[in-house]
Image 1: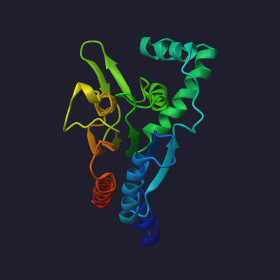
Image 2: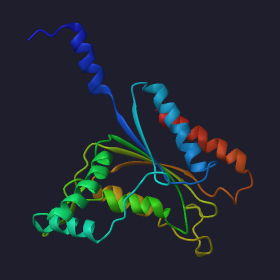
Image 3: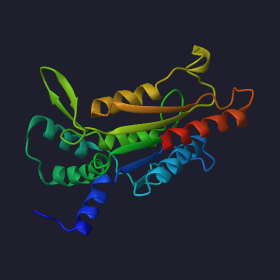
Length: 223
């Protein structure tokens, strides 16, 4: 079939569009993690003007409680049971949020370290979206497997005192990047790029070090 050139050009443009989901996990207006992620995104958009960007600020997003009805709805999926009316309502709510995540091609996270881990609204968000049949599956004989295919994640990690280059119990441990990587892997995302500004406080040149990381983020976005 001979397609008109105009239609072919529209089709090519549509299939080249990448959908990026930008997840902000810091409540601070002067957040370093968000500033670094913004620099990355600015460079990425300059290279790909057709980039489709969806933003979720987990501090501003209206996230439902993951209560007993939602847990029961999740268990019903695991066990192959039909949902009752209450469970169906609960599942429709959380699956809608999870499918918004699954629809993206590229994930950009801005995540500060809180007490060795991630901020609690981000954990809340992950608990809502990490659902069987959407992000992962389970085979009893072999375990979990991810359902997200051919996706990429860019994770911006900041922390005041912790540094992976100088691990010490005095400055905490990493349940931060380790948790995010483990969760993304379980969902099927293995192409993970990390951009770190750690530490942000225990450094002789905070402004200079921050500028270097911003430059690194811009280079990564442009690349």
